[in-house]
Amino acid sequence: MAGLGGPPGGTPEGAPGGGEDEYRSVVFDESFVRAARLQEFSAQERITDHAPAVRRRPPLRRAGLSRQALILVLLIAVAFGTAIYMGVRHPYQSSAGQRAAEPVRMSVVPLAPQGRVPGADDAAFLYAHSPAAHFRTAAQGIPLPGARRTAHFSEDQVFSALTTAKNYIVRSALDPDVLGGEDVRSVRVLLDPDQLPQFDESFDRPAPDGRHAPTGWLIRFDPARAELADPGIRVDGSLRTVESDASTLEVTADHTMVYALRPPGDARAETSLFTVRRELHFRFDREDLRLHQTRLVASLVQAGPLSCADDTANQLRPLLAGQRAAVGVPDGTDPYTSGEATALCGSLAASAQPQV
Picture 1 (cartoon, rainbow, N blue to C red):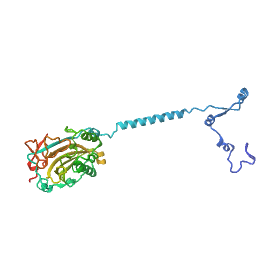
Picture 2 (spheres, one colour):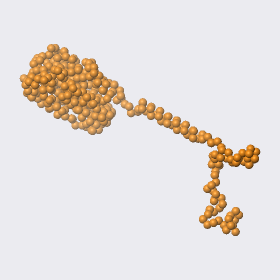
Picture 3 (cartoon, helix red, strand yellow):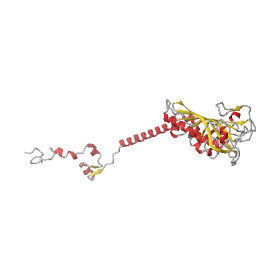
Picture 4 (cartoon, one colour):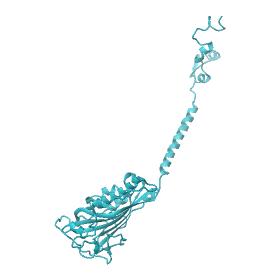
């Protein structure tokens, strides 16, 4: 006999074991009932008010969702504020920003000849009879020393610094377009962007103030005064690298360049030699090494034969074969040696001229 409330013959095979289990899936909990939009009036309410059987309930206010939205907005605001703060006060900003404000120190010292400038028809003859006889030609005269790792920089980083310094020397002192005053961009692109304002101001408003002399950045001749008689410029010198601190490499370049010059447009005129001794100090941080750029820290230039009366800040105006300096000084400065530069002007030592 079936139990109370059970169907006659018992529960069918495969059906749930009891009546309650059969309807368990459709039993609504209290939260579901409270959230229902329709509510049935009680019998008393329907008799009293003659109302319909059900009424529509107002939607529940979801205070929890509002609180969550407020918290989310606050978190976004905090994250945004933190990003702005970290952008302004970046923990990895070092002294590089302070170094960027340091202007290049530059000095250009003209060397006046003590007599007439020697000349000859053949540049090779002059080179052979001058102290530049053993110099190499162009970039071959700027060999790279062995790159050795330092305490905080790898061998590749040291090599990058040396290569960038050499590229600067080649472009700023051996490129015919730069020497003729036609191009400065090839030199400009090698400089750290922080130095570009000073570089541009030097060419827009050149001044002999030790900060804005174009000839402190590169070598260029007055095209109305002289031109190259031989593209094979003679060069000799050295490159040295030192780690100044954990984030900075410095390279010192000391080179002597000898140019064969003649009057512009006169291929039959005699050729003379013009000598430039140039000491450059470069600085590299890791960003400069990555971008193959550099910061020029100091530029010291001795050049002659020049007249001390000429302005050498903007362009070099060489004295050519047979010419004399209008003004000179009694001491003799040899640009082939490593002596200290004269403060304002020096006289070109006789030993520095071709013996012809």
